[in-house]
Image (cartoon, rainbow, N blue to C red; front, side):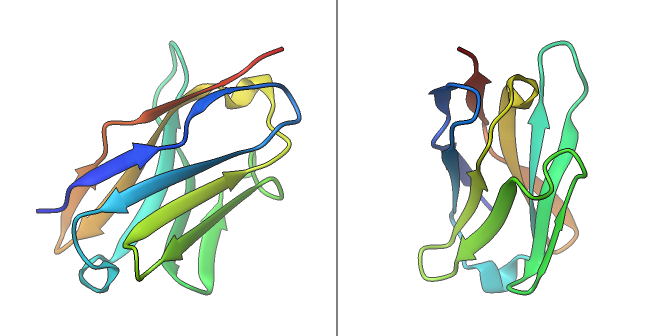
Length: 115
């Protein structure tokens, strides 16, 4: 079992920044991959970014160059630094972990980009 708890969401103006955090209940050494997803109102959940090792990160085209995914292995925490936010980034953001073939999800943190 892996428990994931996201935090860091909120209301931000267009062009602003936020950093999301996802605290895992287990060491990252037992987790294969970690990803961020988001779900905007009325839309399906979409993949945003993923990390499999410190040097293997991938991003959706819509966030490339603006978002950065990273981990703190001592804190068992996943981050998503979001810069140059746009109204279309408004969504509930979820972290996802794959461990031993099973997928785990956090409860989500809401991000609203609006002036």
